[in-house]
Length: 75
Image (cartoon, rainbow, N blue to C red; front, top):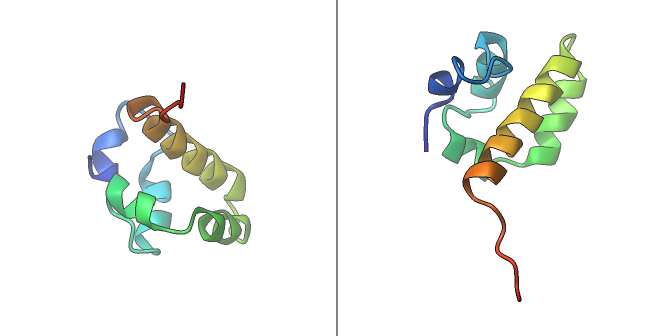
């Protein structure tokens, strides 16, 4: 998967402010994001002045991941 900065052109919510927020949590790629506690990210984002945009960025990354790797269905 890609580094976060490579997603910025196609997904404007993954902007430099979001990337700085992620870097403060040692998240530099989609893989790093997957390994991180998502609830802790949402909590940390809530404590920032740009919390709404950061939360939207987190949701955007989750949507990208879901689109690339849909969950398996037991039939």
